[in-house]
Image (tube, helix red, strand yellow):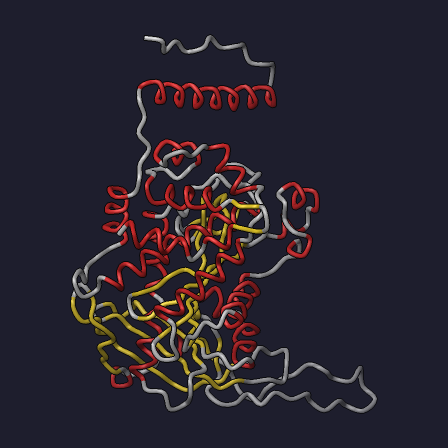
Length: 455
């Protein structure tokens, strides 16, 4: 496996070379550290990766001259070779949060943290993942910037945010960028899958539809739909009374998705098996109807599928989705497309557990995106290993691959003096952080007696 790992890395070597500038060695050290180190900060990486240095790794991530976009684009093209295709492949858009205690990390703010289920101090990244069946790999990432950041030019400058990015972009805006970038990279997928954060944006759904992209987007149960074309119009003005009317209206009444579904008889639902899972066949009840959507702002209306999925034995657990798939698409096909987005959550879980996705020392814009690009490289390698060994080891997991790599990749061998030197350096940095905090909050800290480790 280590031989395939070296060969895999060699295909990315050019992303870290530019003229006389070459950080390929540091890139491979960082990538290895993401897999080998139990905690993926620079100090812990340097303790396990041979010939590495924490300061050099930090400089590589934050200041050296290489493009995270070039790496992400290469990952996207590689993922396309393995799981891309017009049939059965989906591009899944989702976000994940990274809890942060301070206020200096780029994009950090008090905002909704879906992982914790509450508003908390965190960063939010919007990601694109390409998948087919159970195989999925992250291929793009965009850091979401709340308005408290984009309205503060000095804060943006300190975090190294490029001038072109110092504008507020909604999460649906970032999702559209990811879809467009995937197409630029030649990525082949049949549909775009999204949760309700993105499905609630009628503008995003319209834009995708206009660009010829098929989507399956979750919506909340209070989403309003029309059972007939609302046919918006501007009422005729009364001569001589008031200003001319401009506001659109409709003779049709809208209804909330949840209320409409509650009124449907049991006979309207169809029991369908979507796929096999580790716990047996995934069987659900599905309900589908053609409905109309209108935002009450423009004269444009859309007729799309409303797909509802009810868990067997849990009649109140219902997922609602909109899709612009062809009118004659089968119910089972829509159900499978909706269910596929589950795998992006597995991709996040694997990336955080086995590739250090949430373990990073990256306060600035550039270093955050670079860390994510390298995590994607590691995940792409693991995807390929799982697919190569799918017949021999059908249950091969990212954890299995991580353990094997930890045993086969070169590891740093340290004697007692090396261990002592690293410990002293850690203590020096901790004390410097303590002293810095005390200087900001009060009188200067008393000098500390160095720790005696001579015995």
